[in-house]
Length: 390
Ligand code: FAD
Ligand code: DHB
Image: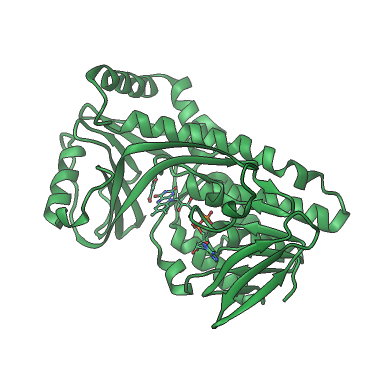
């Protein structure tokens, strides 16, 4: 098979890239090793920053998001048994975020692909990327019991942290930077209306907690736990009791409901650079991971895909490769900003088991500073709603 752009992975990065290229009339094929049902139901991120909302809307993929997504104009920081709200629009020239789950973005993009004759092959596992240093790279993949070759002009590895894209770059050509954290998140989905109108990020002596949501009827909550935590040690009652403790605030109550899903998410910061080797481009989690605090992972993936789409369109339409040449440097500037913000939010809000009381006092001082200073709150708000893509 032959196409212009061979895309590995039908996560948000691969699907958005395919959609933007299709809108510009550029042929592409997406190879995804999981089933459609699996990628549509994998519980992950929930907050879209302003840029992601704008791109989905402008490209005709925002109709359902605008109908059922929840616009949020701020977050609450809860610490020392007090609540402090950070307003976004007043500090960012009117920008805000949208609570709309990754599962829904993925469903919308797959449906659009199907309506518009996009080629997305599920249960198609890419196992090799070859000739990336030539103008005719090839992706080898298995589909329906046979091996196939996809010849393309450009390969976009949108295949997540464990994919083959990054590993296909010859040894010594990538620099990697990494941080592991001594904690993880235990996340639940519960059939209960959120107990708040906006997300709550809580710093508590016993650890971080986050109250998020998926809809007016479904809550999403997270607890900081140990990295090797056993999910079986967390029956529903223990989860609710721990959430009650960490969100404790006079006059406020956490409503409980049926827990429909539980999972543990590891926390890591990781960047591989550059994001290009010959005709192979790395996009989203394939090249970089952030800890989830601050909700940047999905948004970075969408920003990479948007930049790469514009670069491929320019090269295709005008024969001008300058944006392709600039892709890695331009994307990395934003990636490192998000790496810093995610690290900042993570270290300010979690209890590091190795940390002493001095470090805890510094965390509280920073939180008080954000609560009291317009400049500090504006910096958080600007990063949270997302800086412009370029
Ligand atoms: P992915 O969504 O990982 O998509 C990659 C796709 O490639 C997958 O569908 C995979 O099946 C496919 N693939 C892999 N290898 C191959 C192959 N060889 N051949 C074909 N296909 C392949 N971010 C937040 O902001 N907030 C959160 O709460 C949050 N929670 C998370 C929870 C978990 C468990 C994980 C793993 C991530 C979470 N993230 C969160 C991060 C966010 O979901 C990711 O940043 C986002 O999914 C990145 O999108 P992507 O398209 O780059 O990669
Ligand atoms: C969600 C995840 C995050 O990492 C975050 O900072 C906010 C919300 C969520 O899954 O809803």
